[in-house]
Length: 391
Image (cartoon, rainbow, N blue to C red; front, side):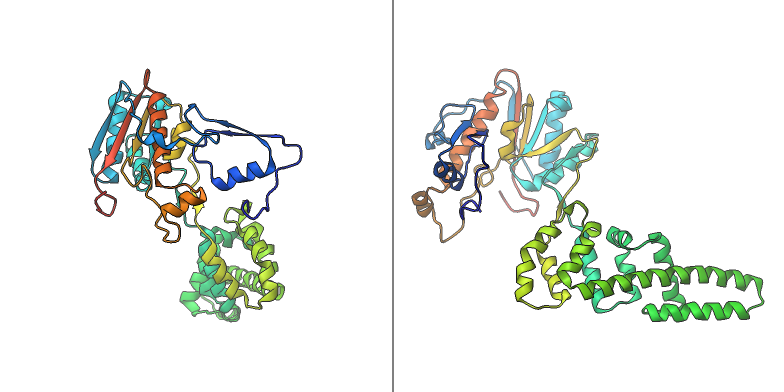
């Protein structure tokens, strides 16, 4: 949107402050220059350009090691994480004094597990979980095609199913499953017939024990019939409204707080839906392809976050432990885009291999200098990836 000129600086803003950003994208610098607005760039070293980007001479600068710390070569991500815990224990560092980071994403989950075994609750902000909305939408798609009992049972396995109809979800699942076993019901009409059969049996029986069993079956049949009727009514309204309007009517209940970005997706595709007439199942399949995972919620009792390589500059902790310090991660691998080789990137003023190396050299220098007098830095280098590939 910046490149297309779709974003404007809000009225009344006369100055922009950029703090601690070492790799300001060229599209952003051109945006500031075009708008002729005053920009203050704050980076803790004068040896950078006007936009706070370290010069290429950083690739040749000698980096001074702090008084306390280590560089250790070990094995796979699990061994790196175990060693990180050992370094913290060895230094007897309190959690408030520890900064934890990794340049290799594979190590992050291992750090969470290893520190948990040591009694520290650590959170990986980059971790994500599959969206439950994806699972529910898959079941909803099948229910639109075939409004059966099994499809409703599948939908009730997700929180979204509970929010759409009234009743206790566990009882609804028990009721439907019971009728599936006892009467082989397939849809709402079968459930209604099963309900009537149970009533007929109840009227004709004289056995007290059988009456109790049939009373229980009748209670379950009433619950099953109600939940099937509710979902059938929901399906009928959805199909009559059309996909986009129908999905908007459900959005507040199946995607609370718009965590999966459902409303944004509906806004983006509304125009296409006017031009291309497709059934709801088509749009659900398209939506399923675009829905990504959702961020994992941070536990309330966490004491540390696993920082990414570029985030470590903002961590003031005295004891810094950084995993994944391998070539290819620090500095990052060059682009494999055949249409944008290094020569073309240089001509266009885009970040390239040498500039990324200079940025990372500066960042390592800054991390060490911050702890040169009264701190400790432990860098951990892996030998292999999670899959066993040599790094």
